[in-house]
Length: 371
Image 1 (tube, one colour):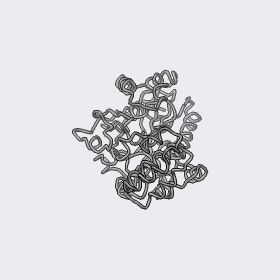
Image 2: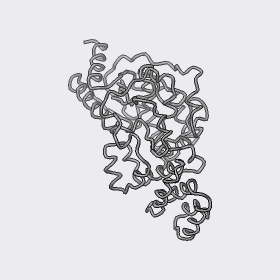
Image 3: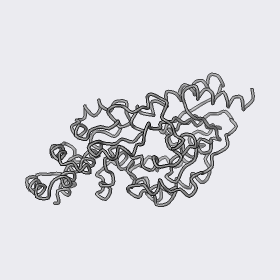
Image 4: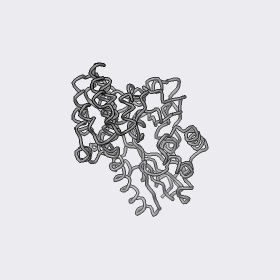
């Protein structure tokens, strides 16, 4: 059996497991990927994501992660939405969840399939394998570009001619020496829609992301209070942001996800903010069981919900925000104060502030009250 035959058997097996695209490349990264990572970290654009810096040496060098690896099998799973995800931004009494998190946790969905492929490779081809789904220091987007799956667009995410912006990625590193696929070339051209639509100006330059200004980072990765300069721009986004992905012209070739487990869960399609604000920890865990949202934790999630309530323009949600003033989490209480400052007339907010003055123990919440 030739090396090409082996490679095509691996590709066929991965496609049979339900992946939408498969590519092959050498288990090594070029100098550009390492330099980009070093520049990103040196600029502090990773924010609270200390794990990026802690694993930077292994992240930029697959040989340091697993010296025996010779090839990478890169797989992609389409999670394309059925409609325009930006339309939900107009429903201000509802929260919007990033498309990638509306279905079952993609880590679980993809890992099950990857394990099946990796097990088959080990047993049928006699090779050693290691698999990854965004859970180890592997720079998956440069590998996907090397393997011909797509290219990193100006928004730094992967873009595919066949699937647009909507792909999950996973990798199997193997001791097999497999012939590489031709790498994909950058096809962004002069387009800059993804850069121009960003609500918070998170792109200091094309192909450069300052994560500390990104709504996805702020609503998911950031652990503390969200700075006031970003709150209005967050709108009703309670988990992530799809703006830069959704406007990509290559999405004209995208199609709806074919994996049923990635279809939107009822609780995440267009959740009512008032109902989300009433969640205690047990209810939060039950509602988001099996979802990527669960990893956020109830307090940070409700912090985001309070910001969305403040941006809703719905005076009827003021009572919901006022109830959150008694929440155990200062993250939630602080954003409840901010929401009330936006929803209540100035005199009503002043009366409420007078009743709460001197009663708040947390400094950040006191600052939201104005002293």
